[in-house]
Length: 231
Length: 231
DNA sequence: TGTTCGTCAAGAGCGGTGCTCTCTTTTTCT
DNA sequence: AGAAAAAGAGAGCACCGCTCTTGACGAACA
Image (cartoon, rainbow over all chains, first blue to last red; front, side):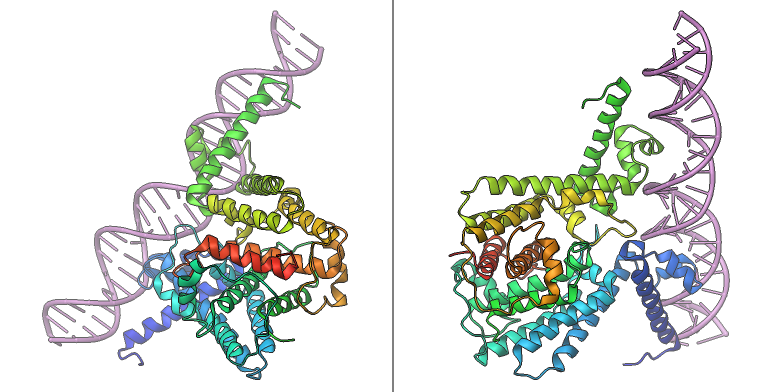
């Protein structure tokens, strides 16, 4: 649906230009350094004019967040698409590296998505569809692996307590048709993945882990073994 | 070493009062909302006077960060001290819950320590001793469990690649006298712990996981099994 | 004891921020 | 062509971190 009037077209164009400049500022200064006035200045606009396009700084942030989730989700989707369908361990590792690579390439955007919430900012509900794109990819891998019987009986571990059944039911909308035990093993691996990336990006590994890519790969292989992904 | 002159004593008192008020502001507004002017206002001081005590906002932040690491570290130390020495699984779970409980009780302080780095702020080196207190507790548990042969031969998993040996050597200063494999299993569990807490605190589990304490406990038991901690 | 010197609170001010309100210009629709 | 809607410009408010200068006070020294 292309814009009909000239005004609508220039509005869409300017909106895109604002988010582009804002994303560049975000990449160099971080979320805290994102200034509407600076964006306006760079566009040759007066600061108040920006408010015709984004009613507040938070709304601009929301646009950047949605863009970020989509960019990460797309990177993950493409990474998975390049793998043989039945190499579940390979798909898991590829997805892990896709997340990490994207995060390293866009540290401030990653921080915006998975770091501390911006104070006073409440992510609106319309970020959700974009936010779960990467998770859906992971859920499909788990689900397909389970149905291909590629989840080897993992090490003995306590089963999930019954009180977690209702939570498992919700997660099953993302990892469909798998037993509770698989759900929570997947959830644990998923948080470990982002936990590692966040630790690495936020400096928690400084002066400690130097071979980060190798260590990350190894850690994700441990999580694969925990999930029961063969090999 | 108590302050000698009256001036030094009142200076120490005022410094403490500043950090106390700042910590309260931090708890209610978050790191971004920490304002030197607001702190000064609450003290009945003029804003510029604060700079006699903290040369910049970043220095005040550093003081709060060190305090935060120490508070978390102390909570973890006390939690571990209350456990039977040879119940290694119990000690691990207790430490996990201590971290999570502290984080839930002090969300903004936790975000300051483990969330996105404050833009333009570089944590000085003197935060390090406080920052590793909790890690040292965990390292001691792992090390003692290994030497008590309480780390059951865990599920088959690839051994750490040789290129990680130098990193393992560094981590060994925190988890002493254990083989590389144990090092990286511990590191993975450690990042999974903080990954979970961050996910929970930063809203990633909203509308998904509701029985959070139970789910967390189960996830940490899975990580215990991954490390080979018995039962 | 008196004086000097370092420390500190206070105030004004600089350049920056998000945001609002008003006014004018431009474009679109009837 | 005229009315209505949209957009840009400008001034202004209340805040921020931080700097510089000024004047007062307390502590150490002659």
